[in-house]
Length: 140
Image (cartoon, rainbow, N blue to C red; front, side, top):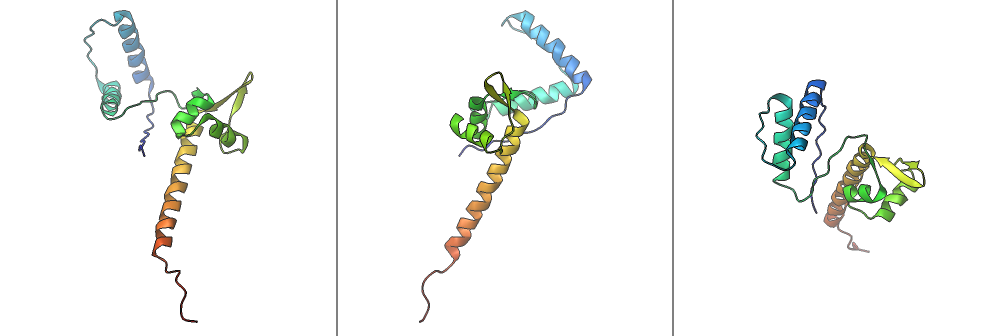
């Protein structure tokens, strides 16, 4: 089982402005070599992202209010699109319609994932405890 770690980072206005300048500079380079000087919070965040990228096979990024399709939510949850739709229908995953298409917030998907992982851990502990119980019949 792949273990996912999610860290929430608040981004202040200064860091947002630095990121805008960086994005424009990278965009104007059009894939050519770029030499950057980074400092402060932006440098720390990019260092964390680079370190994470060196250890994982896939990376998801976006604002917590980003809207996901059921297929995208399924990738985060590690389940199929139909199972995501079932979670939406039974109220476990809040969603809205955009036209005829369902959309849910990344923050809600991450909350559901944490809840389901906690349930799985609790069931695993319960099962391990059941293994220790002696169900053999005693003397009659």
